[in-house]
Image 1 (cartoon, one colour):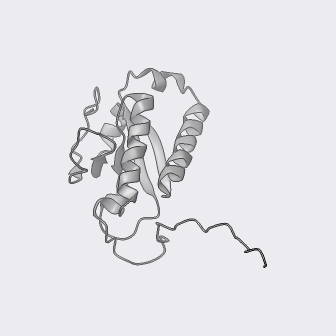
Image 2: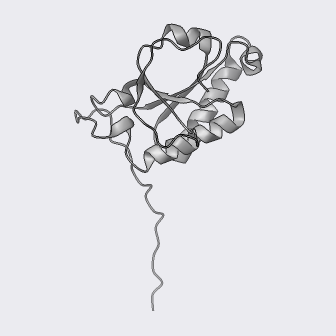
Length: 156
């Protein structure tokens, strides 16, 4: 009797390429179980920094299928980790890249992760945002329209 030939399984594709002109059919920009996996990624970030990250950007705009999933960790201006990044921000870039890859591994989504200073983020916060990972939340709820985040203390 011949032995069965096994091949490595193809990874499950959860993402549609950005060059398609499809309307995004998913609430919160991603479907299930991707949203649950994003929530878990948010809890991992919270465990490391004590602050919940936000899902932001085109993934929440409900227009077309986005090319990536923007996740932002907004730290208070006086957070010690912001002070240790230094210039030319190679440590910041390395941490952002590492967390983006971790998010991609956990969720299967093309994560664009950035850590931002709350004072800087407040100037550019005019889009939708959705907190990720809060276990006290009954669900992700509806994305909120940013009207300028509090520069001294993010809503955590």
